[in-house]
Each structure stands twice: as C-alpha cells, then as structure tokens.
Image (cartoon, rainbow, N blue to C red):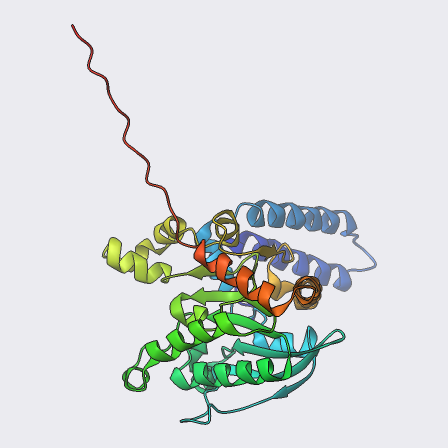
Length: 330
C-alpha cells in the first residue's frame, strides 16, 4: 500500500481518478475514447505536484525526511556505492545494528562508508532500534574511522537518525562520552571526511558521525538540535505545535545553507527521493565524487586547518541593538 502524506492527498486523488479512467477505457476500448480526458488529468497531476512541492513548509519537509519509503543507508550502499563489505562490532561491548559500516567503492575510489540505518517494518525497526544508536554504535563507527585513517581511505558518513538512543542501558554505557569522543577524534583524522544528511539529522546522534570536511544535506532532509515535537513540548507545552517549532528552528536544507551550517544542498526529484531512488542515488554519487576530488587536492595539514576553521565559525550570532530614541525638547 502506498504511504500517503496529508499534503499529497490532492495528487493521490487525481492519480486514482486517472487509474480508474484508464481501466474504464480498456474495458470499453471499442466504443469510447478517453484519451483527451486522460491527457487533461495527467496535465493537472503535473501542475498540482509542481504547486505543492514548490511551496513546502518546514514541517512538510520533516514529514518527507521521515517517509518510510525514503532511501536509507543500505539502499545507497547498493546503488551509489559498489562492493560494500560490512564490518561489525565495536570490540568493546556488542554489535549495534543501528549503525552500519564497512569498505566500499565510490567510482574509482576505495572508501570507508558509515551510516545510521532505520527499518522498513516493525521487525526490522526493532533490529535497527529505529535508527537510534547505542554507545557501541558510535564506538564501532570510531573503530572503522580509525581503520580508514590508518590505511589512508576517505570516510563518508550517511546520517539518518532521530537521535542517539536515550535509554537506561545507553546511559549506563556512557552514550554522551561515546559521542563526545567521536567529535574530538573526527576533528583529528587526517583523511578526507564527507558527511551527508540523507533523512533525519537529529541532535548529537547525528553529530556523532557528522564532523567532516564537507557537510552535505538532501533537499528534503533536516538537521536539528532537537526534534520539532520535542521543541514544541518544551516551548509551547504541546507537541501538536510541532509545525510551528519546525519553522522556528530553521532546520530545512535551505535554512541550514543560509546559516552556513552545511556546504551544499543536494537536489531531489520533485516528489521526493522516495519517488525516484535511482536518480537520487546518482545525484548523491555525483556530488560525493566532486567533493572528494576537491578534498584530495589538499594536504592532510590543510584539511585539518580548514576543518577546524569550519566548525569554529558555527554558533556565532549578533544581537540586534534596540533603537535609540532621542528626547525631543518641547
């Protein structure tokens, strides 16, 4: 069954009407010709799709980022990359299925790919913990990144998580420390690092594999310090204010680029990545190769200096001074 978002209803209704008309024509092929009506509906579908997807709100983009049919990390590992060879375990506690990683080929480049992985159904979501990693997931990621650094392999991370797992077990095994160590160590790795937010980029869970020379974001992905629902619950005391929170948080790809928090926005097919995964995978590959080529021209020392300078610029802001009202003698 096709998953339908609220704002997609006008398109789905037209598509259903078109399908019925085509079936009706097949049944009455000799007596009635519906070709003109079919063309009119197809034109209306294209126009409606353009109108809706050209004016998406921040909350609608969040819904697209969470779409259950959206390509996940493993999907890109089968399309954008070749010959993926998965590596398991953090060599300290356990294997975390919410984080996948291993060797792969990107064009002519041998790389280390690491990403967060969600599930398509209940069984897989339980296996992947809904894409929310435990401490061992981040420690596995760090183990693989250190291996890549040792062998001179570029690192590519694919981010798609609502956040790190906040459970008691994760706290007992020091989830905050695991993420903090990743932030420190990723800043010091000498190989090129590219991070891509392919869906949800939630809080420290995303940042734990997000320190990179280049940070890219898909057009309908988001990157945020807190989920819109979490922000709404704190500021408005009501989770139903999530659309208002999404707008205020400035978490869309366009907002992130304007704020200088990401280096490039990767375009998606008009109806979202889930409607044309092949084109989306090709787009990702093209941009990864472009940035990798640029980064490989730099020395390790130059990359480290630029990486440090990049993240030092984040978080700067200027307070607007209140207008000075002069007294008028009267």
